[in-house]
Image 1 (cartoon, helix red, strand yellow):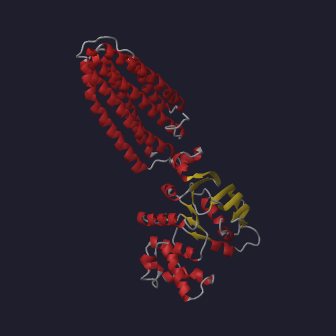
Image 2: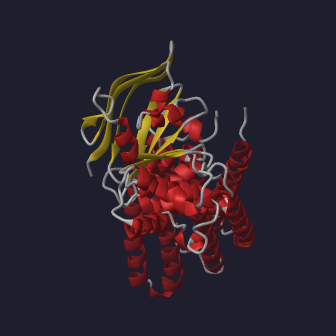
Length: 252
Length: 219
């Protein structure tokens, strides 16, 4: 399986403070890569580098290359809007728009003019809701407010919203950390299903979650990539002592 | 700072070593009962096997509890898995010791016709291997474990020799067949103990090096 994302010698600065140090990493296509590490280790910053979400921070500066499908996303002529369509993102806290369930999913399709007509729009919304395993729970109340959904349903709605614009990569920043165990399990099952069509990068503080859902795991500490390995290896015999100490809870 | 799991892993280690020590004693006493014609000691070995069974269950329960409550990873996971797999092996070694003691009870009721050929040698090697395998577990010594594995051949060679001698004895003295058959069982028990100690050493290597050497040509 080829690499979807290829990062070389990535450095990231918030003003004079360096947050990421010389990161080189490949994320294989249609796999789940989990990013673990203590708070402040740079894993969320790294995730936001992948769709240039950090561009909104004026003092942010990036060096090195980040290629998706062989194209450097930090090249001057990059269409950042198109990039973010291709690389969708789901956040820790679900953030539905103050609109109906239908409109939340239809929004991205509409502004990107992806649909041919009303029927096509409805079909796309239905597909996104089915792909995010939410359809059966909301099909009879599509025109009610998204705020009426439970936390777990709202998070799956945000995943549906990301899927509606047909991304290729999905970035998830602690997508289940505010959810109860059942809602968390649904999100995890969804992640595993989604990798059939998408490349997924997930940041999580829950080590067991990384162990359950990911194919490969990367461990970050103090802005450095300490180790990346197949998840099974990472959780049974990691190469680095720092990784071992972190995943066995010797520090955190 | 000590982690919550550390105390549990410490208890697990102690329980395994206690089981190992009890198993070593069972083997030593079973052979003493046989060679010293001590039926009282043989009966004690048979009776004490129940203690070993109880210890096995306690360790099983603790392994399950640690996995359920602490979700061990990396070294911790390998440690719990190794202990969970070494425990039934030690229990089986203790079973073989009890079987040797049962054979001793039969043989002690028959006249002793000759020395116990190479059985004490087999028992000595098996005892040393068992002791070294437990030391290698405690000190996490993969190299010592590999050396112990190689010693199993000494037991196998001695077994072949004992087997031949006992068959010869049966042919030459048909009246001794019953006793010789029981000695043959003892030899087989000792040979199996050598195999089981090998299993323990392979798990020691998994614990220390995370590599599977069982069923592999690379030892």
